[in-house]
Image (cartoon, helix red, strand yellow):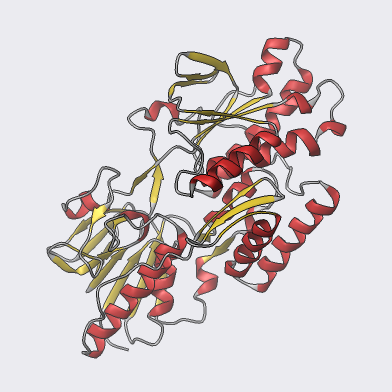
Length: 421
């Protein structure tokens, strides 16, 4: 093994793909992440909506690399990078030197200058976010069951999702199914079928990254499930009592934010240009401008396609970038020519609407309905890590399909972000 030290910050799709791609390259690798697990984010909303448990979509990073002596895993939060000294600073005071640095630090929720909304309208990026949303959804029904005031009860049974991208659409569909089909027989004082699920989108249609015909199908499928879709109406206020949509205030005790993301501070750490979402603008080989030994990948990087459109912030894109940078590093270590500039291959866009419908956009080929849902499910099961997770997720989905019962409806923690009352 050589003395070349590769420091990778972030154990998401891009970071893990890069580490996997450097197997046998002869470098020493240190992987740093704020959490001890890799998270399969595409199914995070299913934890938030009581379908899956946390252990089915997350895996300890140390376990993944237990048989890789070239990989050291550290649980820590990076607070800065000194590109001159070639060091990375951690919050606990530790400093790591590097020969090559890869920043795969992801993104978080964007509240467009209204960060004070976050406590009452959490986003969905981490397991903590998912369990917080799940707890609030379930507690809303429990509180409504004991509430004597009809106005308060209606507010408790009104769920508002802000943002109609894939996450917002998927959340709205599952919450509606939970309320209208799974829970009605379990409560005595309330009729959960009267639950309102409101999906708010400032733009003109849901799922704007999809073709218009698929967006229209998704909206109709949502409305069939009982979701109220409000388009072209921005949210102007979020509070513990509800949400203001345009000029109209809607009492709603459970609000979920799915309207946008902002990148990690990687661009600020390196003092390099960034786009409006804070993503670092990188070179064609995904290196930082003027810093050939620093690479930025995934949601933290602003990468343009050949047609001038940005590479989407989705898991396949991050994995492709991680695999590409691994090839660049291997070429440098072996003295071989560098690979051609990065080119993104779009494998298609997928989204589900509840448990029985989905849309898939492969470009020329567009699918919707039951067949798309099956393809969506098979694709997601395939990309899970380990046979156990694939079997557990497949079994959960089959059980819900046959019985209509969600298996992860447990309130296991005290509500910490809002008084339970």
